[in-house]
Length: 299
Image 1 (cartoon, one colour):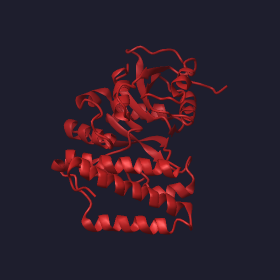
Image 2: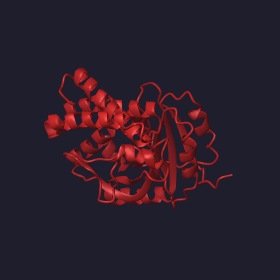
Image 3: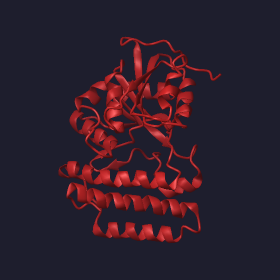
Image 4: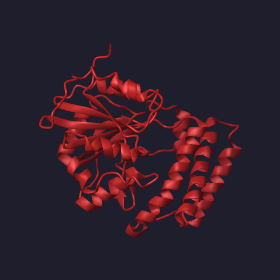
């Protein structure tokens, strides 16, 4: 049996960190994240909240099976679809004033809980480092072209931002902006980062904890995720253009479509070309759909 963290429940006074996992059909990867949490042994009481968004693949049952090995609670967050709602429900139920949000399909690196808790205590609003090398094949890494965070967090004008599954923050900051925007169809994590920094005069800081970030590795999943991102980006632009958010120029849009065609034409040469082409195609289709739905030119 895996060596696990103490499972005693923590009350609101001594619980130093609440970890929230938003979950929708997290199998088979949820087990890897829960096992990684089992191996954590921070010098403080903490709790794990799995906010289930309507899973039908046994995720809820798997999470509940860890009740003797982790200080875990499983919440029903199936009334409204989407990770924003699930995370909001999880944070609302948290006993600690310090929050860490994780995704069900990623894997934390050893020592993560202590590192993120220390960072929150010092900096209030933090993001973990992202490792895409450990659990993703090289061909899919090249297809996504995600930059490393060695030089710091990426700044998507006007503020720094990070993915929702690697954030840590004081609960008062989260509550000050009413959590994740459940009306956004994508980019709700970037939106939260921006609103917290704008409203509270804080800066999102990079902490020493690392999350092994899992990329989509099947063509349907790659296309679906990219399409959602494109549709959500148009809605996100409508919300933030008044604050200085830019959009791609006609030349940049043309280059992206040309790159899409080029990668698809070269798909016979490597899986990387095929995956990159599918990713760009999904993004382009999503941006087109988002432009129509939101009545804005965002290509």
